[in-house]
Image (cartoon, rainbow, N blue to C red; front, side, top):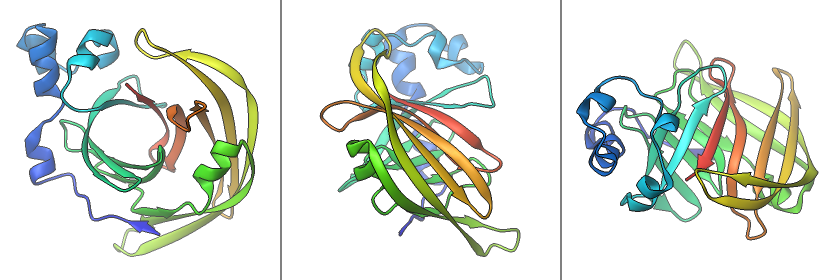
Length: 209
């Protein structure tokens, strides 16, 4: 079980690792970044390559805005990504295992063999998600998931193409169901995904930049 104590305040919120990098590289002027600007409108491959940290794009499906997250720390197969707003996202081999600062956050997850099933493109596994309820107590949700390979697909992320397999993951449990999508290359890198976070947050699109 991955249960992480990452908060949306303190040093993570103070470092502002993304906006400061993009302001200087883009030379777009401070007015661009003082307003809420969708990074998809201004990001280029040159900006991404010049950044000092690895970046990813995070876009809730039910919203029109996206955010850029920078790599904050790495612990084995766990990477913590942080936005300038102090929101954090923890990925395990590209699969979401925790969030902070979104509201109705995923506090932790036991994904068992999820990544291995995504790599193989088939098989079944169990997901266990932990959330905080209204009394600040952990509520656990369990889902039975099935993974299927849909097709090979070439995707382009800011002027860079990746040859991938599109993998679907369908999960069902007592609290309902959801479906995730992963675009994974031959080396096991998940370059793009659409993953379910929680009932309030819903689905999010994630791209490694």
